[in-house]
Image (tube, rainbow, N blue to C red):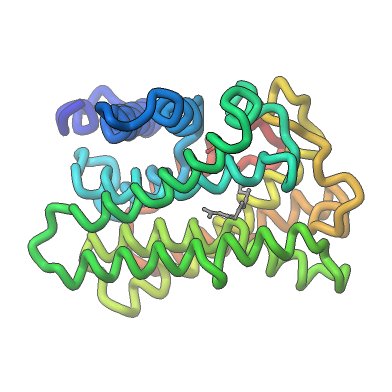
Length: 302
Ligand code: GRG
């Protein structure tokens, strides 16, 4: 897929998003087309987890913030691929019996159910590692930008981000209040959304003040997305969600604390704040609004 597909006047935002998603998929596919000596089982598990049907929201966000939908930018696609690898690595671990013990993900049996727990863990580590390799090899003349991108992604994974969020999720919301539940949502989902958007903003060359608006946008979007995910967990069937549902029953997450209707309202408020911040950042909001209409409607389809 070249730039032409996205610039065609015949394409509306929805078609252009599909074209972008296809380009992201093609890049991910090429990135894990690994020759021997990578063992076949590992190679197969990595591809299975990464290339399963996904919305690709995070790499799309990188691209929309970096360049929008006017063209396909190979560097933005690669940065998005790195984020998607981290996200997929986290899903593999999240699904393990010692974590959420999930049977279905991305409309198929979870990676460990197909390849076994040991290979699933190794596939997750391989993806996590590869993500940083992709960033290190980016074709960007200024090495300080590459380092900044690596630092942002590292920060989103580690004990300020996903790993901390997962540990808190396992421990349960010990305070049992909305603030703690939202903090968990921030760590589990907001930080990676924020990293994706910030990396896109850096590729766009945004100044610090605009970048701060981009981070605010992504933080609110991430909180809305996790809320929508929790609403799906409560209301969707496994078939519609494409993954296990009902996993949050009894958890003190935001949706269980507020109830469904108030959660939908809160989700809409997060989206409203996200939109305000996006406008302040100066980035064309139209493509992002198209993405939100597709995936963030809290009435909700997965
Ligand atoms: C070492 C990378 C790493 C992570 C360790 C396991 C873990 C810590 C974190 C998991 C956190 C987690 C599962 C957060 C939930 C995020 C979420 C909303 C997932 C669903 O994302 P979608 O809907 O899924 O974008 P698709 O399949 O479309 O990509």
